[in-house]
Length: 112
Image (cartoon, rainbow, N blue to C red; front, side):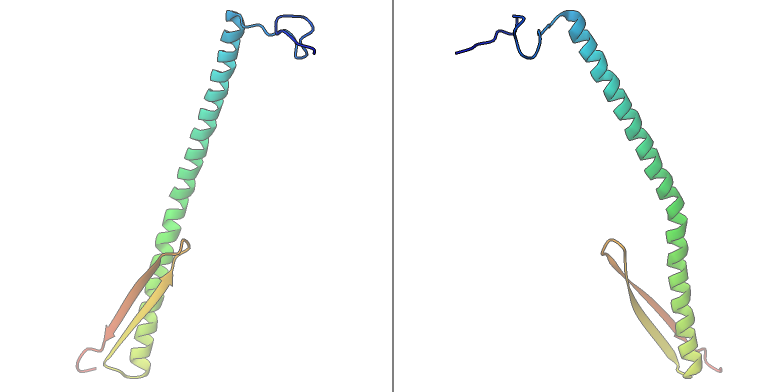
C-alpha cells in the first residue's frame, strides 16, 4: 500500500503551502474576480436599462397606432354602412402572453 503525505516531496499534486502570503494572494485574486464580476453586472444592468429606455417609446407608439387604427376602422364602418353606432372590441395578444382588450365606439351625431 502506498500513501502520500501532503508535506512530502513525493505528493503527486505538489507541495501544499498554506502560508499567510498565499492566503492573502488567493483572497486578492478572489476579490479582484468579484470586482470584475460586479463591474460586468453593472454594465449589463446599464445595458438593460438603456434597452428598456429605447423600447418604451416604441411600445407607446405601437399602442397608439393600434388604438388609432381601431378608431379609424370603427369610423369607416359607421360611415360606410350608415349605422348609428359601431362598437369594436379587439383582443391584442402581448409578446409575453398577456392579452388586452381594446374597445372603440363611434356614434353618429344626430342630424348627420
